[in-house]
Length: 411
Image (cartoon, rainbow, N blue to C red; front, side, top):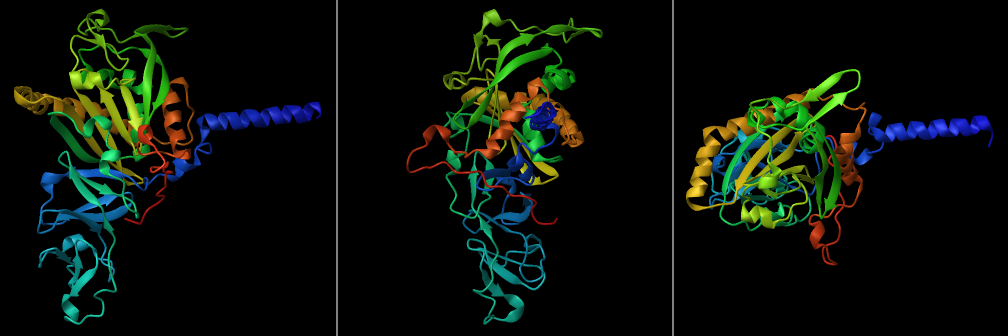
């Protein structure tokens, strides 16, 4: 090889390396294709108390669906488009138990099977009956939420996908917020697991107003089962930046953590007391992320979850849940604490800052930096066979590959 050829080869290698570091998404083709969401997962979509016998329209993974209860109180989810003329079935009414009728011509669908059971304007002998149907989707109610399975085959158990500590938890109190937000679901997942923004963007949040935030941390990512954990290695409270000046988040009114007085939980710092159930889980890190976009933030007395549910390529349903694993009086004190201000401070002001930045994110192109190791490890999951429960694989439960939903139907 000539000197010029060797130089050209080195330039090509450097070019590929820079590309892989994130100037565009050629290094993560499966990730780029998943803009509208992923198949074969359960997604929380709304509170169960909001679903009665009147259909509720839901958009999920680029598809229009509706959810309602049948005469026995069971949750049913169906594709929200009449095959006749494309009218939304959710605009119709339930004239007979276990059915829903399109408002246009009275095509009537069985809520359980999706089959056309009757066509009011075509008489009892309509040939459409038994020859037309709409897609149904498995739906379940758990922890007060309605979950819908976006897949065409037999679904895995919802319990196989829940965070392990939520499968059979002890007594608990739950506070949460569900709202539709602008921005792609992948950017919300990246933001939630991102190390860098938490120290800078959220330093002004009401939730952190009396707590000192480090200037920056050194971290590594640990994969355990189906979860990625963000593990802190070093913490820096202030720094001198050459030619610029000093940066610190310390203020006279902010409280510095007193590590020596408490136990370490999730590699994040000390607390005088940790919730026994949370401590028993032995989480390797404070923040963890799993498919299909579930963030878990571990605090000494509660766990905060964020489910980034894809509505379509440009919108995300934010499902923020705060679990405290206590009963009795502590449960009611939690509700007072949550509804009295924490709901607004945490699920409003704090996560509202995330909404602001995700809505403004315009990538690729992009130029990644050292703290983006969390983002890069997350993207790598999309090109790997992904188990639902990585810690319980056996011969009867083989690894299930990620299946991509790209695009979706037109709004």
